[in-house]
Amino acid sequence: MDNSIDSKKCVVVYSGGLDSTVLLTKCKGEFDEVVALNFSYGSKHNYKERKAARKVCEHLQIPLFLYDLPSTCSSVSTSGILIEGKPFLKSDLLKSGGDVPEGHYEDVNMKRTVVPYRNSIMLSIAAGFAESIEAKYIAVANHAGDHAIYKDCRKEYIEAFAEGIKLGGYGEVIVYSPFVDMSKVEIVKLGSEINAPMELSWSCYKGGEKHCKICGTCSERVESFLLAGVPDPTEYDT
Amino acid sequence: MDNSIDSKKCVVVYSGGLDSTVLLTKCKGEFDEVVALNFSYGSKHNYKERKAARKVCEHLQIPLFLYDLPSTCSSVSTSGILIEGKPFLKSDLLKSGGDVPEGHYEDVNMKRTVVPYRNSIMLSIAAGFAESIEAKYIAVANHAGDHAIYKDCRKEYIEAFAEGIKLGGYGEVIVYSPFVDMSKVEIVKLGSEINAPMELSWSCYKGGEKHCKICGTCSERVESFLLAGVPDPTEYDT
Image (cartoon, rainbow over all chains, first blue to last red; front, side, top):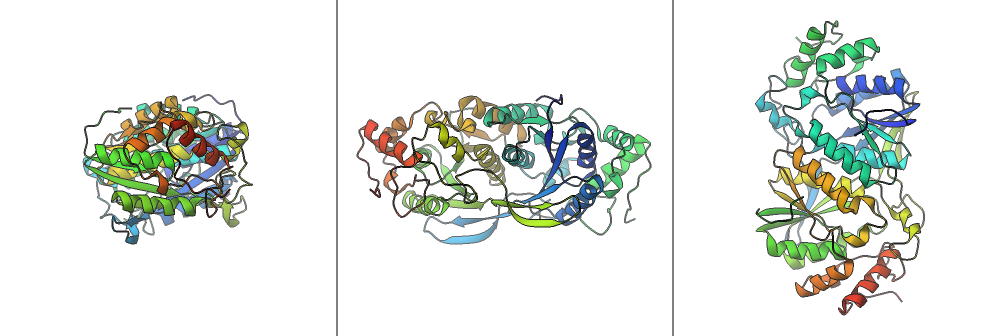
């Protein structure tokens, strides 16, 4: 992993969430050319996240690419019978899973919202896309607060994975993860400093009309603005 | 990376090609439970490979899962205009690319058939699937002969990536790549010893009715059977 900047083009893995909105704004200031790459993978809140991603990218004048990972697979039994539309990855974050649990983002029950290897999958695909469009960097917004639950957001993981990515392509794509040691509070402070359009971002896992304020990621959002001493621009349901 | 076997369930990344057919047969002998995971990603020869994958899995009595990666993305311009169906990864192996070059598999012009980070993408998704179905291992058939052209088949890459995979999930999925130091000739010899149904496998990048015998992967197939001293069961076009 190399967090220095010496290249012109960067693909930002961009969910439309708070952290990656700050990252996208930061990258726009640091690279000559930035494109955003947004994934869908069957999550309950995908529609709202993607809508936010479009608003933010239009606001920042950054081209946005949308890549749709299927949430289902087909299976062929040993007797040759084909069944289509089977859920592929197991998580309560997905439409195919159970209800999204309430509580703090770092609570143990939030493990049910882990999409196995989601970060690995998105980073690998982003690396392939970066090489295809001759971008040297891929940027990802994982931060210290993700580490409790999301194992593939941890620094050790990112370092090993980034080494693989560097070795695995012709362009030697570099993973840029400047938030890996930062808390979400620090990210909100940074976002405020660099005028990131945080008010346009979407966090809530429930995907309702407004942010629910009680799901894990909403409670983390509320807390982060509060502790950062930054006015919270979010419209909440309650 | 840990090439010892101490678990019961393994997901084999299975293309329907020669190498992974031998791997699948080997894994069936070594694990209590084996499932095959086949990807499509818009390659020219996908139809033939998948047909072969189904035949081999039925022959070996192994359940097969089919996961379709879209070959295109959408883009949203800075003025908010959405365009669908744009080619996503750049490679002459894909339907969206140029003609598949002829010549030896290890020739420099075969670089045009590289799908950027294909192995990383498939391994990450396989890891997510493995964790979802509670499999401890993912097996992949990359071998020494792949190394010249396909950077994400090299040992250093696989080791770094496998470390990332181990760190990135709750199940600590282990990457099993027993062919990483073997040549294709050795794989064919092994396939012959363990009665792998190599005659049902598909290699040709052109995806015609029969194997073309002249594309990079066909010439490598022909050569490997010859040098292994194993009768070549393949039906060729010429």
